[in-house]
Amino acid sequence: MTNSPTTSGLSAESVARLRRTAPALVLLVALVVATLLQPGAGALRLASPDRSHVDQLRQAIGDLPSDALVLIACDADLGTYPEIRAATRAAIEDLGAHGARLAIVSFTPEGRAIAAAERDRIARSASGEPPADLGFTAGAEAGLVRSVTSIVPAAADGPIFDAIRQRGGGIGAFDMVLIVSGSDISARSWVEQVGSRLPDLAMITIAPTFLDPELEPYLRSGQLLGLLATLRESTAYADAIASASPADRGPGITPLPMLVGMLAALAALAEAASRRLARRVGRPPRRRTS
Amino acid sequence: MNGFMASDLAGTLATWVAALATIAVWSYLVGYRRLFVLAQHLLAGLATGYLVLLAIHDVLLPRLVTPLIEHPRDHLLLVPALALVGLLVGASWLPRRATAPVGAILVGGLAAFALGGAVVGTILPQIAAALPATTAASSDLAGEVISLGITTLVLLAFLHGAPRGGLTVRAAAVGRWLLIGGIGGWLGFLLVSRLSLVVDRLAFLLGDWLTVLR
View 1 (spheres, rainbow over the protein chains, first blue to last red):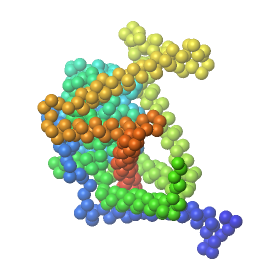
View 2 (view 1 turned 180 degrees about the horizontal axis):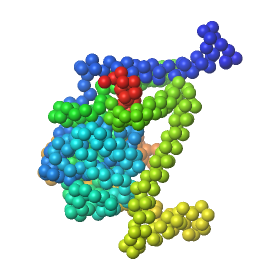
View 3 (view 1 turned 45 degrees about the vertical axis):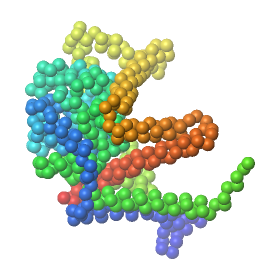
């Protein structure tokens, strides 16, 4: 009789379900409380004390010539973009503050959706001109290779498009590419397909954390001039730009709920380890076979 | 506020839809599968519709149909391309001998791009960057030696079959632990990454939707 009502009126199945879901619900409530308490938690900081990656990126942007043409390659994933959203917006603002002329292109459908939303946001905020829209290029890596020689849509009209056409009409027309990486097209694709064809092109990237191990070697070898690929680096960069110009980029990822989540993860890990240890202690020793 | 939604009626509507979709997905946590499945179907339908629109609006019309109609003589290569697309579309009822070469060209082209890029863009430059420079400082050389040692140990852990000999077995075990440590570190990064996504969604619900967070 699994469905028989208990004394409190709940069936045994409901109680079992509640027990199963209780940890997730408690964690969710704790995260909500931590998010609400956030404004008073000034003592916590998320940014990394190691600012070398931030400094590298800022230097790469700072070294741009005046009136530089910069391409934003927006190929982020919808699922991981919130992690790098603040850094991406800060980078666009940083580039704008250095007088760069921006154009935006996407090689993935998800990236195109994000690019269109970001252009809309910039147009609404009236903080500056949105980047010139180069649209969506199909074909993934094959599209990247084609764009090396031709990236401007035939119907595109405007001063930035004219400037790109005067310099050859391909990716080589740009002084720098800011790659907003995702899982399908990341900075690795750019290094492999575009970097090998245009070795003098400066490339910087902002990537979600899971791409960090893949992209770090390209930074070490100099194939990328800048890389922000962890949450703390993105936060440190957004903070650095915010201190220079206090524009509203929306709330970043706040530290207190992150701390609560990490403590919960550590607690789950410790509980699993202790359970495993207890099982091992209780198990009879193995007999050696000769 | 994530800044994506405008403050007009359309923006408000979009915020409500996004909030309800978030709650529908999270309902899985308390065991309500129906709402979660509904959200999955919504996502699949919207993604398919979006992809179709994108393909028609950004690819087929401007890059295939319009050039062929307006300047057919300047785009003669698009005619065989169109024929290849037709062959792929009709692959289910055309003979295999007609469709196999098209698929082979497609797969071969993609593989050539990927392989060529990996060799020229990654393997060769990374090998060049990993070689110790003749003027390297002793700390750099020590780093190279440590890297070489760790790489050897990890490769030993991948040896096919059971490693033989006490020293090899121990070295392979050390390599395995190094590998586990590396994967653990990466998973730790991933945990922080995913946690940040949950926190962002909460900030959206509390800030954009309920407006209790400013």
